[in-house]
Length: 176
Image (tube, rainbow, N blue to C red; front, side, top):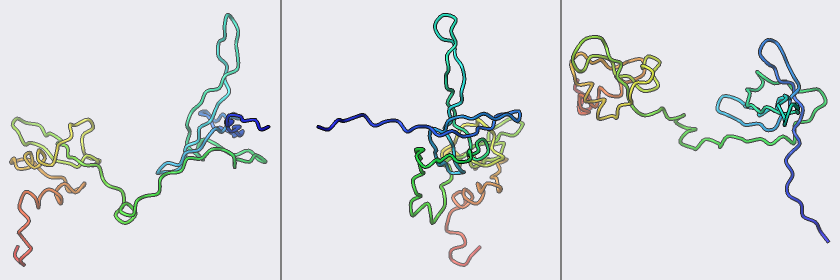
């Protein structure tokens, strides 16, 4: 006779968690997740919570922290059984061309009255205003045609939008 049992949850491994104010505590490493710029570790930190009546009972506060900035392994502890979530490998296109940049454009309005006063930026430009509405390509081109509107050269808005505004036929036949 065989008995079936539900898959058990992996036993968390002890790990040193570095807290603000030069404090540290031994927590429990529950899982690891690979992210584009490194690793996140899900740790359980020991705490207390109020129970029924006037009781106090042990509890665990779970949080994702950066590794290795906020955790240190403990000597003699194996982390081999901790569940790991790896990133999907990049596609062939992404490996060859690199990550895609976010699409859209934003207008940084300048002082004064009237339409078309300002600078058009790509949404990921460091000079783009936070919270500005994202413009479609068509709207960005409409805005860019107004006198007094500039196209940012820092983020490439000028290099990407100017050929569309001026037409593609210039420069292809050896003419300027």
